[in-house]
Length: 350
Ligand SMILES: Cc1cc2nc3c(=O)[nH]c(=O)nc-3n(C[C@H](O)[C@H](O)[C@H](O)COP(=O)(O)OP(=O)(O)OC[C@H]3O[C@@H](n4cnc5c(N)ncnc54)[C@H](O)[C@@H]3O)c2cc1C
Ligand code: FES
Image 1 (cartoon, rainbow, N blue to C red):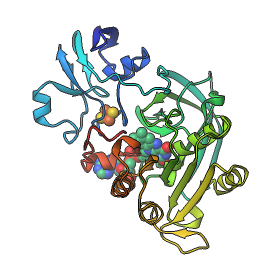
Image 2 (spheres, rainbow, N blue to C red; image 1 turned 45 degrees about the horizontal axis):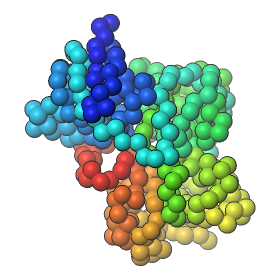
Image 3 (tube, rainbow, N blue to C red; image 1 turned 90 degrees about the vertical axis):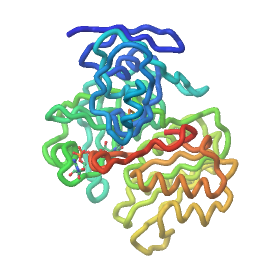
Image 4 (cartoon, rainbow, N blue to C red; image 1 turned 90 degrees about the horizontal axis):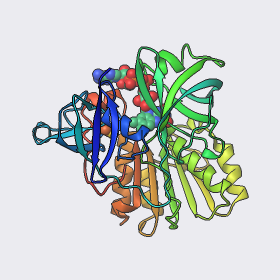
């Protein structure tokens, strides 16, 4: 397989990239961190200018990389592969206090595969070696049939040899319906790589934290809460977890116990389709009730793209600036086919 040299400007670093490898993958494996979120050509976060040389643009969504941008030499480097030596201009911006952990390949043995809510499974993998990552980041699972799917890590880097994932079943989904919810079993071996993503806890931001998740969007937020607890608190944290019904509310006891033990942590579960003794309503609506003014906080949102977008709007209406909001959209194949165009403002962190 031919290999080409990629020069990354403005830092001038030079790395090697195989023809069957994406530019982003080659960079991340060499510890050169460039912005990315979905790693599947859907979100546009990794858009970069190719200053010189040829790339195959790969499976870039036409909604995330417009024809006019293609003509001007832009590429989505998470799917673009080199066809010769290439010079790429990237935004090499790593926030202070956030670690840069090169992407590596791992083998994981399935230790736990439990149904924790209707159509939601907890998958715990014992890795062949520890993975270093920031709370909030994700892994790519190799799915039988040659597909890859991203899943957020719900456990903390403290024990990087065991990682926990939360997976929601998608009807006819290749990874979930067709594998994790059908044939995968305890003891099986799984190939994966990581860590990926820019949705990670910013330890140096000392403002009170709002963690806002729906469904399995809880996963990276659980990693953050546990990480803060392991490091002795030090941040005021309020976690909203929105689900449809009481049965969908997984890990409730875990968070209730944590809230009882620590003054710095508040847990606010919410049901959107059921009345109960707790709060009912969608997270964006509850936020609007609880925080008519949200300025002075830092927020991390995670879940379906629709939930993330609505929550983002609620926060901005409450005067929280985009620079204080981090988001992870769980895009899937249906979002991509529907043309989830997601590149809105360079100020919005994802
Ligand atoms: C950064 C990131 C992190 C994520 N983390 C998590 C997580 O922690 N937990 C979690 O549960 N999910 C997470 N996701 C979503 C996850 O990666 C998968 O997208 C999801 O599990 C579905 O995968 P699948 O292979 O089962 O379904 P897919 O095969 O991708 O299909 C998904 C749905 O789309 C439909 N579909 C497929 N192709 C088309 C088409 N062409 N047109 C219309 N519909 C179509 C399928 O029938 C199915 O219902 C994350 C996503 C991202 C981007
Ligand atoms: S990270 Fe490349 S398009 Fe999303």
